[in-house]
Length: 407
Image 1 (cartoon, rainbow, N blue to C red):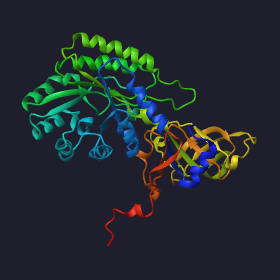
Image 2: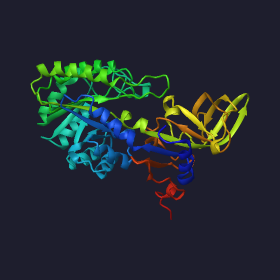
Image 3: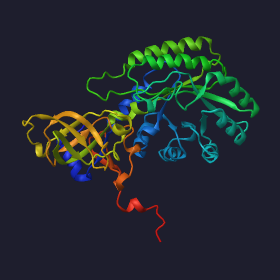
Image 4: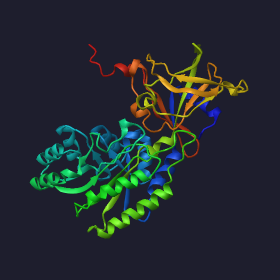
């Protein structure tokens, strides 16, 4: 953990809990990992901002030289506010309305479409314009079926058998195909599946000899369990380098840019989530540690059966000599499924202790909600000098009703 136990309690006293806390140092380190993955190739790293759209984190990521992906006009709006230029933003759209598409077109932001009908709509709206197309190479991967975004059972991308139809629509509206993109899914720790998908994807790229870029997608994972091994970046880099070198031997445009879309890898490990233990009880032989980390704050364990390492921090530096017990850490939401960590061996907890959920920087706050009219938490950044700074205020009771038309 990048902060001490004492600092956890100081942050709790200053900002309250639940509280998302991020490390600027780790965030910058992860950005550089991706930038250095293929140093000898013409590569651009696009941070997939859906993982975490905090404005201050986006500014740091921009400072590190990364570009950015957007999935909605809302993300585009925040990314522009963070200082990204239109040419640094790639709108990877999915089933968007004409109004959403126009929002990007009006701002000269490149759009990727992932269906023939959306390509047709783009052509009608912006004849002669530049566009990208998302293909599905037939290979998918991910930590849960809900996040596998390629293969034969997903809504994303155009299968390669329809390349001829893509070409027909491009010609019909005099469109310029700037690039193609793919995304196989989220959270792989074995790079081989990424390499295999790239080989299939590059076969599609070969059908379009004048591409400015080829977006290989993302999905780079981080270990959520102690016994998991980190992604071997050196091996992955070497394997990718060979595949791309072989491709460039035959591809006409030797200056084509290769893009990557890491999201989770950039932000997951830079974030932790702090909570407070408010109750401990036994129900029919089971021990429950009741906290303020409900699934409105961190939904991944409920939505994806995801695993987060958790730790108990004893109040006032209290002793942990009482030993450990098997306990389930739960939140304060009126749902039986409101479980953060099930049947874990943890120090015996007491009211007033703190709980920490690790690797919470990705798909944490961005997926939080006001369910049960709970308030979304604050976010704090620990800067390079170890100083803490509030980068998003906690919701208030007043913010719950700010959009009502109150007479």
